[in-house]
Length: 321
Ligand code: FAD
Image 1 (cartoon, rainbow, N blue to C red):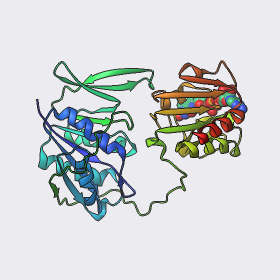
Image 2 (cartoon, protein in one colour):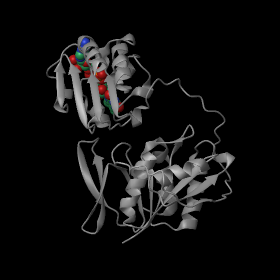
Image 3 (cartoon, rainbow, N blue to C red):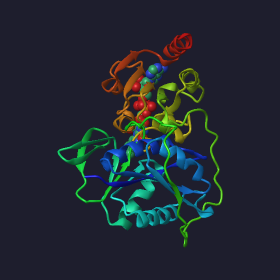
Image 4 (cartoon, helix red, strand yellow):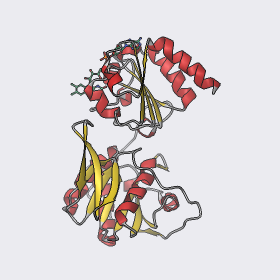
């Protein structure tokens, strides 16, 4: 059964986030040969439509308004609902990002539809679109099929591969004017924290530190390895609570959920709440001086040792490659 599926292109600081391209490939599977329509919402986002098409969307609809310059659930839901009203799609895919987590329940309520959130895999089986998603903080996975004819899903970043970019691909880009009204909140100013290096939620490699780093300076050997590997630095809540680093680095049940290709856990015990945020990483390396540490149960490779001795050796080895 072929479907028309909308995909929201998520824009951050003028660029599309990778999860937008992963959402296009998800939408392609749901569309089963039908049409994938990219939706861009914001101010001055029109130029990004062609990139959505190069990653597999068939065409794009752009809603631009100065009131949409910063994300608000009120503004973005009005814009998306107007596109849904015009396009009458059979499905909608968003990233399971901070934006997607905030916006999708509101849209589902307004559309009177179901929602399958935090999808990590999708397949067509027995004539159904089958979604896989983690439950119980990642301890198990469930497979779900949407009973509702309207298929609405959010996908976890870094899990579903995007299609290859085809620079020669083209498609129609149309503008839709939407009167954005009655915003209950307005973003006056955005103050960004000075962030170093690679974005944690989209990083392919993460070097994360726990209470075992012992101090703010204890993160330095992790940062040095991260620089050599082109990796992001993350942390356990233990390290954040101890004031060794900022809470924006926290990974876990109450922090960020990450799925990098490689996760290097340094001085992290492996509490269940931490595992909830990283245990789906493709390869996990744990460095801990306690051979009984729980982190070794999920690790593919374990190094029993002092992180302050092991990390400089790893950094030197990778520098030489
Ligand atoms: P510890 O458990 O203290 O472990 C430190 C480890 O470092 C030990 O295993 C030790 O052997 C090792 N070590 C020490 N020195 C060295 C050295 N020199 N070299 C190598 N290894 C060394 N935690 C999260 O991480 N993320 C969350 O989102 C989160 N959410 C939570 C939500 C709730 C509701 C609750 C109750 C807890 C939550 N926690 C979360 C906290 C969690 O339970 C743990 O307390 C926390 O993860 C422990 O952090 P840690 O592993 O860094 O510290």
